[in-house]
Amino acid sequence: MNLDKYTTYGAIIASTGAGGEDALKVRSDKEVGARISGLLGERPQRELAEAIDMQPSVLSRALAGERAFNMSELVDIADYLGVHIEDLLFDEQPAFVKRGDADDVATLGAVDRCSRLIDGMLQIEAVGR
Image (cartoon, rainbow, N blue to C red; front, side):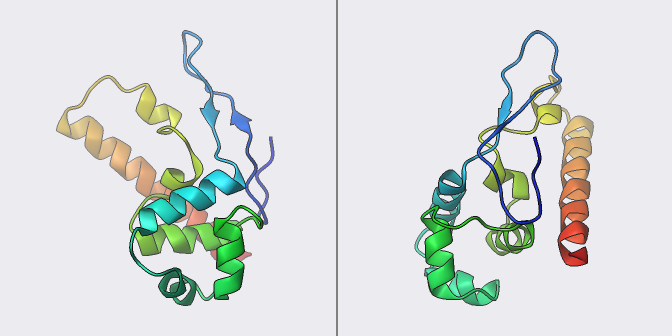
C-alpha cells in the first residue's frame, strides 16, 4: 500500500498484532471529509479554509470526498482542529495503542510521546514537499 503526498487512499493497512487482530483501516477520501466536518462542528468552513490557506470551494469539494486532501493540508487541518492526524485518517486507534493493555500513567505518557513524534515527522515531511 502506498500513501503518497497527494492523496489518501481508502485502503487496509495490515496490523502486525498477534492473534489475528483486525487490520487498521484508512478512511476513504469521503470518510476523511466527513470526519473533518464532524470535528469542525458549528465552526464555518470558511474559517477553516482561511486557516489552512485553501479556497473555500476547494475545501467544500474535499469535505464532500470529491477531491483528496494532500498530507500537508491534513497536517494543517489536524493542527487547526487540535487533533492528531491519525484521528482524521484512521477508523481505529493506531496498532501500537490497540495492543497496549496497561492504562497507567507511564504507558499513557509513552503512547502520547509516540503520537507527538509521529505528528512531528508528518509535519516535517509535509513542509519538505
